[in-house]
Structures are given as structure tokens and as C-alpha cells.
Length: 343
View (tube, rainbow, N blue to C red):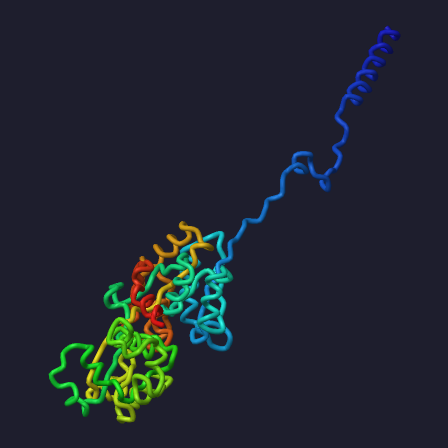
């Protein structure tokens, strides 16, 4: 019996040893080490962002930065393109610098200056306009008038004359005031009108635009007011026989009732324009579609504001909330191309 008891005890001891040896070893702390799966996981690449630059003119800036009004346009172009794009801007030194930036691709979009667009398009047909703007988005109202006028005291010189050419022929040998040599509505447009009637394809009185802008050629004396207001004053005070100006300046200065309008031309508002060499068709379509569908309800707050909005950038515009973008193509500015073909 004693021997049996000893065997049982011995068997229990052996079983205890075997069970202890079969237990799992304590876990090793590998918190600072990555698992093979984690080590092989590829790093996420940063998303590519395409930078888009908008070019603005010096008169659209103040203190080295664009005016707050124009930042609304930058915001809406960003909204049009969405993620993957970063829309910024630059202030060019002058009109020529804007053209160079768009032609070379250092800027992708430019705002306004229809004539700068037109001359750039004539250098590269891939430079195109995509939208312009006007009351309720009506193209036939999206611009401003350029006038050639004289004082009403001279009305007797035009009695019985109904044709534009005949009225303007009276001005030959008289004194005339332009705004400045580079002003679109105050010089380029009116001198083109004269050239049409009195250039090589007209009466042949002049061969170049320069003759119309030089004293003693077509006009006896040529003056430059440098601003529309000064030119209006020169006409109103009869310091020149006739002159050119635009918009509502004569009315604003109380001179409208003293003026006799001899010729009038419609100057379309400038566009948002770009170079197709540097933007894709999809990108162009996104921007154009977004702007054409922009309203006070879906635009950035303040965009259509009469005091601080985009369309009030130069002055308070009580009708700014009625302005809308509309799509245009290069044919919309045919008038400006013809203007720039004058020698």
C-alpha cells in the first residue's frame, strides 16, 4: 500500500511539471516595432495641385495688392475649378505686361481691357475670351457709348446733314480733342471712325491714324485732355471745336444739353480671357459655366454688392445686383480687331 501511495504522488508531480512546461511563454512587448505588414505599406503621396494665376491691371490694384472687389472674381474661379487647384493672382505693370503674361503662360486668366485682349488675340488665336458681362446678361447692352460731339453753338454748321460722314467732314480743318493716344473710347474708337470715312478706303484725306492725331494734318489743332472729364470741359468751354469722350461724363458734368452728338459707337465691355495653350477644355468649360450661372443667391457674399462688389470696383453701381456674365467667343470683339488694323 505504501508503495502504491508513493507511485501516485510521483505521478502527480510529473503531471504538474509537464503542465507547467506546456504553458505559453510570456508575451514580448513589440510596441516600438512595426509588423511586416506595416513596414511594407506604401506612403501616401501628396495630391498634385495645379496653380492658376489671374493677371490684373494696375488700376485694379491699390497698395501693391488687388482691390477687394476683384478678389471676389478670384474666389469664384477657385469655386469653379474646385479641389486640385490653387487660384492666385498677380498685378502686372501695365497693359503690355498683362498681354505678355497671357501669351507666355506666366498667367492663365486676365480680367477686362477688351483692347488688350484683342491685340493679344491678333498675335495668337489661342488667346480667347470666355465671358463678358452686362445688365441681365444681355450682350447688346453690355458696353458703353463712345461719342464724337461739338458744342450746340455750332449747330448751324450741320443743318440739313443726316449722314455721319457728312457731319464729320465739317470737322476737317477744325480743332479737336481726344482723351489720350491710347484711350479706347477716347481715341482709338473715334480715330477709327474718322479713318473709315477719310482713310484710303474713304476719301483718301489721310493714310494713317497718326495723321488724325497730329495737329496740322486732318485737324488744325489736336489736344489731349488725358481724362474724359477734361475733354468734356474743352468741348463745353469751346476751347476746341469738337472732341471725343465716352459714357455719361457729359451728363455728370452738366454739359449734356450743350452738346450736339455727331457720331456714336458701341464699345463692348471687356472679357475674362485666357490662352488655350495653358488651360484644358474641361477647365475652360468649368470656369465659363460657373460664371454664367452666377447669381446673388449662389455667389460669394458681397459679389454683386453695389458698393463693394466686383461690378462696383471703380464706383458705386446701384444696378450691380442686376449684372450677369454671359458666354462670348472671339467673334464678339470683331469691332476691336478692325480698330487695331488701322495703320
